[in-house]
Image 1 (cartoon, rainbow, N blue to C red):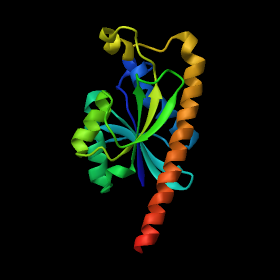
Image 2: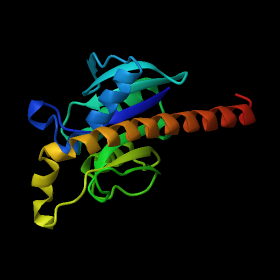
Image 3: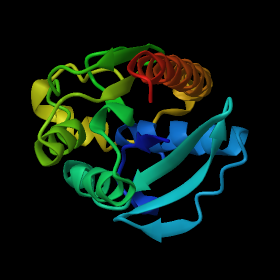
Image 4: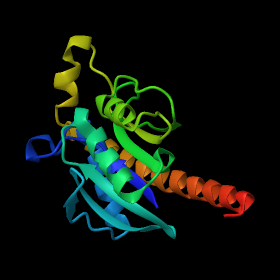
Length: 189
């Protein structure tokens, strides 16, 4: 099983904000694959299902962004799952809106949800799908910017980037599963 963890902030106030790009993507992924995010445990809302024949848990932490690691740690502990089976989906101000990038390991780039996950798991050995939201011109406006809603003229591009990010998650998941199966075959498990 793999954990696909969309990062964001809970509640209607933050629903369509830039910081909730991870929530928007995993909601679309779950809808596409018929995974109902109806369970509430492990500091998150989640559902279990399959994507391309691979078992997954799709989850959205119900903590605030900077405490996302609490949910990740609780789920991994309950499922006895290794951090390298996590795909965290999150916003990234260093990428322009419309850009999606995949990353394994590495630093948090100032993203507090990723920092929380790495800190509480004690490792950076997990995968990420980064969704570009752009950056404000003035560095002092970053908090207000990430907590602002997408503008009407950005909605078409946002929908395209969500679709692109869903595809990136599916591709990453299938590649990770293939590697895991090869490793198990080689070790005789």
